[in-house]
Image (cartoon, chains in turn cyan, yellow):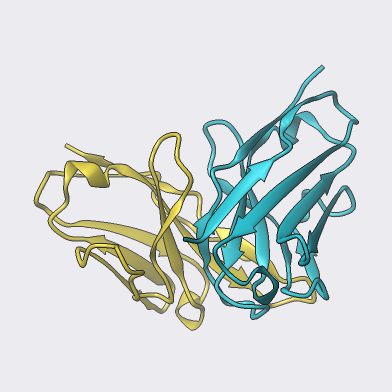
Length: 122
Length: 110
C-alpha cells in the first residue's frame, strides 16, 4: 500500500537549521508531485511547499520562501525539506503528502504521512 | 491572495445531515478537495474534485461547488464523523502558484 514516513523532526534553537525527510513506498514516486504541509499546535493546516515529479518546478508559501528548500531524490524515493533560519512560529507538525498528479496545479493530497514534530525554542 | 472561509464549528445530532461550507471568490471555477482530521491523526481525503469520493469513503459523504461556495455534506451523521474538516484549492492566478486551505470546521456530534 502507499505509505509516506517522515523523519528528522526535533527541537532546534531559533536561527537554526533542520532537514526533514519523507520516505515513500507503494507507488511510483518519480511520477508524482509532492507537498509539505504543516500544522502548528491547535491550529489549522498550512501548505508549505510543492515540488513537481521531476523537480523542475518548486513553489513555496510566502511564510517560508527564502528560508526553506524542498527537494527530492527519485532514486531513493525520498522527499526532503531543508529548513534554515528557523523561527518560533515554524513550530508545527510537518506532514508530507502525495499529489494526485505529476505536476498539474489542480490536484488533491492523498495520502499523508503521519507527521514529524518540529519545535523551535531556546 | 486567495482566501477560503469556513465556519469554525458545526453541530448536528446523530442521524441528521451536516453541511460544511467553504467560501471563496468564484470558487465554482476551481476544483475543491475536502479532508477529515481526527485528533492526533493525519488528514484523510474524503472528497476530491468537488464531488468525487475516494475508495473506502462512505457514500454519506458528498460535495458540491457553485458560485462562491463549496459544500461538504455528511448525511446520517455518526459519532465517528466528529472531526475537523478542511477544504483545499490551488490558487494559480499568479506567477507563484500556491495551495490554499480553509481555516477548518470542527464538526461536533451532539
